[in-house]
Each structure stands twice: as C-alpha cells, then as structure tokens.
Amino acid sequence: MSIGIVFTVTIFMVSVVAYIHQWWNSKPRTQAKPKPKPKAELEFSNPEWGDDYDPDPVPKPAPEGVPDGTWLPKLDDEPTDYIPKETRVPKWTPQQVTAVKPLLDLIAQGESRGSYNAMNNGTVGRIIMDSSYTPEQAAIKLGAPLIMMTMREVRQLQAGTRSTGRKLFAAGRYQIIPSTMTFAMQKAEVKKDDLFDEATQDQLAMSLVMVKRPALGKYLGGGGQLRAAMLDLAREWASFPHPDTGNSYYGSGNKSSHTRHDVTHMLDNIREVYSAL
Image (cartoon, rainbow, N blue to C red):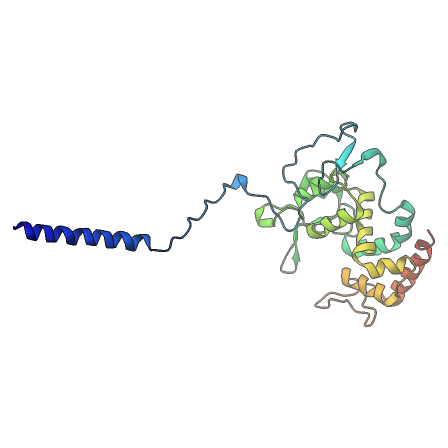
C-alpha cells in the first residue's frame, strides 16, 4: 500500500472521529433523576389525622422554669407554647354542657345508644363492621374501655384503614370519625394526654354543635334563626328532620327519628337556658 493511500485513510478516520465527537457533545442532556429517599427518611403523612399527628412521639423538655410533667405542647407542638395541666379548664363550662345536654342525649340516642364506649370499624357496603357498645366489648377488641384511653391512644387506633390494621373508626358516644376528631380536638382544646372519658367526649361534641355548625351554635347562644339552626342539625346528623320536609336531609334510606315540633321545642328550651349563662 502506498504512502499516499495510508495518509488518505488516516485523514478520513480522523475526520470521522471528530464528527462523532462533535455530534455527541451537541446532544441535549437530561439531568439524572434523584435517588428516592429510603422509607425511613420519608415524612409521615396521613390526611385523615391532620398535620399534628406524631406516630412516634418523643417527649420534649418543659420550657425553662416549668417543672417536667406539668405541661403539654399544643397540637401544633410549638416547644415554647404550653398549657400547664393544673391550670387547664374545659372550653365549655359544666353549666354550658348541662344546658346543651338534652340535645347531646338525643344525638347519642341515634348514634351510640348513649354509650361512651360505643365503637365500630367502618362500613362495608351498608354493613357496619365490629360495632359494640359496652366497656367489656371495647376491652376485648382494643385492650381497654374507650373511656380509659388517652386521646393519643384513640387516634393511634383510628389510623389507616381496616386493610392496614386499623382497629377503630367511629369512637365514643357521639361516634366521632378520624377526620372529625382532628377538628373537634382543636376546637375543644383537648390535648393528646387527656382521657377520652365522659367529660372529654362531651367537650368534643360541644365543638361539633357550637363551632362546626355555626348557625346552630349561634341560635343556641341567643342569635340567628331557628330554620338555619335546624338545617345545620339535619346536615350533621341524619336522624334529625329537615326543617322544611320533616324527613332526613340525606334520604337514601336514612330516616328522621324526631319530629320538627319536638326538635323546635327542645332547641328553644336550650336557647333560653344557654343564652342566659
């Protein structure tokens, strides 16, 4: 092979390599996807429980000057914001709860047979699962009666779904479900170390009556309109009548258990007593 041919082939090969190098460098580059975090580093999230739920709580030290064991952070767990246990007072006074008790009793009659230990684990179709009403039944299913558990324990039992091991859905005399429990605890200023006892359950129910349903709360406090209050009541609890029809607000098999006359009379009586407190 002559020197000329070798030289020509060499020049050709160099040109090809240079072209390939230029083409490769001109291709658009995509950034490598970041590696997923290990499960242990993922932030815990459960939309049913809200942002304040801590599945593995670590006790925080008391603020300076406050003895250990006498305080509890609020639901947002701000370490500098606390309410000493010995100075905690219920959001609603015993007199206010007593004034509204006829309504609470009527609600409980349709929800739980009046039992503070009533519970179920949700529904499948229209079938209520694992319902019970006595402290003995609750102890068998959960390890203790509901009224002897702390709010933290109740909320832990309400976590997740039945398929992931949840043991409790609607809890207590007023059958409060997980998403509503978060709201009720915040509005009633109930803390995680409070017992889910009779007094606490009544406070949680008061938050539903007086805050979650503002037209109802306003009427009982001496303002507002009766029709709006009755409509609020019917929207929250299916056993109460629609103020216009007398039937359940929800229909579809739900039946009103009370007459409009009886509910009107009861609300007016409560309004008279409550608004005077």
